[in-house]
Image (cartoon, rainbow, N blue to C red; front, side, top):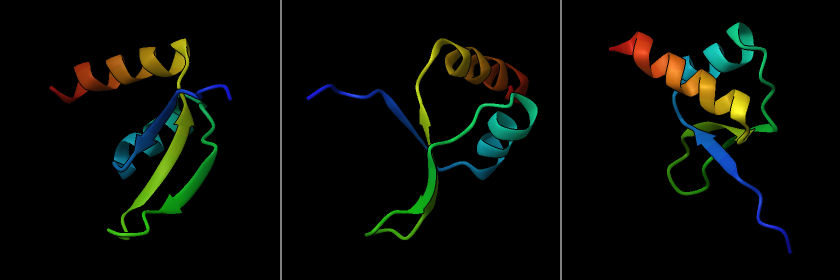
Length: 60
């Protein structure tokens, strides 16, 4: 079975930035079974990693 590289995003502001500003689609939006916190699930790619670095540098 192939291991997928997945990014679980629990930060709603970051998820909004990735989806709306960077046009990176998420695979699903769900709620953690134990904590009930909402997360967005993204497939890790070079584009996603670049967007995360950009977001991180803007947040400082």
